[in-house]
Image 1 (cartoon, rainbow over the protein chains, first blue to last red):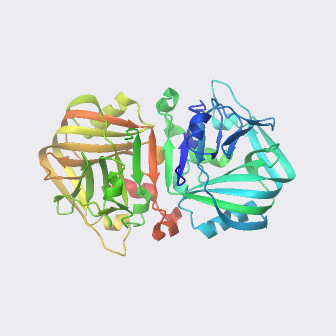
Image 2: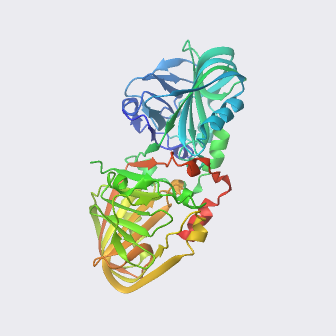
Image 3: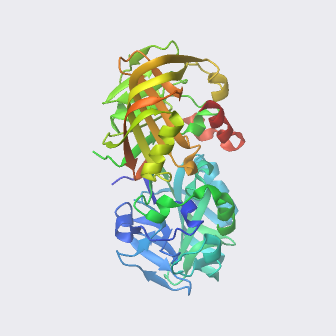
Amino acid sequence: MNETTLYQHGTLALLVPGLLTGTLTMKELLAHGDTGIGTGEGLDGELIILDGKPYQVNSRGEVNVVPDDFTLPFANSHFAAYRPLMTVENATQEELHDQVLGLTHDANTFFSILVKGTFTDVKTRAVAKSGRPFKSLAETAKQQSVFDRQEVEGTLLGYYSPQLFNGAAVGGYHDHFLSADHGFGGHLLGFGTVTGEVQVQTFSTLEQHLPVDDAAYRDHDFSQDDIAGAINQAE
Amino acid sequence: MNETTLYQHGTLALLVPGLLTGTLTMKELLAHGDTGIGTGEGLDGELIILDGKPYQVNSRGEVNVVPDDFTLPFANSHFAAYRPLMTVENATQEELHDQVLGLTHDANTFFSILVKGTFTDVKTRAVAKSGRPFKSLAETAKQQSVFDRQEVEGTLLGYYSPQLFNGAAVGGYHDHFLSADHGFGGHLLGFGTVTGEVQVQTFSTLEQHLPVDDAAYRDHDFSQDDIAGAINQAE
């Protein structure tokens, strides 16, 4: 089991023009890790994999475990081998992010954070699955729901990518959330404060897999897409 | 042996501010492939690996096989499993590049080309190794020699990377050359025409390894570097 490799299927960039076909199954994704995040075909909800279990938060806010044949256009996974980094008390999201970088000096490295604790004013979102023909990320993301909890116990699973890889991945942090009771979660838009335990895992390798058998991906001309702009908007 | 993965150590971006420490040995690079290109510590020449043999063209134009403990800041390798694509006759470099993309539709995919034939007006370059403290890529590259041959039989080994990965790799084609008599080669600046056989190999995966144990890499602030500009200048 390789604990220094982060596996990624697809790119953030291919979502931008709406290349939303599911080109990897959950079974294949889980072969590369027991921990991860992603989205389903047509931006079908927000995925968070913890301890080998793939939870999906859909646009009604429901949390389901998805089957092996669930397909994804964009996702990443890795085998968990976190090390404890610090305890935080009433830290804001920005403080959390900055303190992790300050302690790890990993700004030029792919790494993951796992934060278990009590979060206040948590805001998440999940997009509603769109059908074919798929529209652009900006159009599809209009069909999103936002959820919040004043105080909730749960797990933040985040991935940090060096800015050089913005577009392939999300440059900087990309956080998903799942509550301890598995009743609430999604793509983390933000929170007030967190009190809990912070763990990190550093990767030496990004294994970037591309959907090279997908005709729509192969034939798309990316030169006209404003990828950085779309990431700013959507993330 | 994995024939659908392209392994890359380091990034083009880290060369720009002069992070030129050799952070991978040739032995480690060869463990990921029998075919590849790269440069040595301090931009010590231009490497081309063919059939498992790592040739270096130094700034005096000499071609040497380097030992296992030769170190590299930036390199890539893969296990050769090329498929014949086409025969070309008096094709320019631009025609070669365009025809390969036209036939493969692989503009969004990492792939390699191997061209064996007779080349006219071949221009290569090799940089002279610089010592510590390393200077920027632009400064170091001033110590480069340019070589040419009016007509020469040899092998062009090239890698194509999708533009999204420009900065991590060289977006577009990155070609090295070695003559059949092993007396001439380097980073290919250009040629007049080629007549010969063109083979290609497509990769579904980029295995991007970063020098995460190198303090200079970890601590560098890349936000002020003009990476795309430097690639335009140097490549």
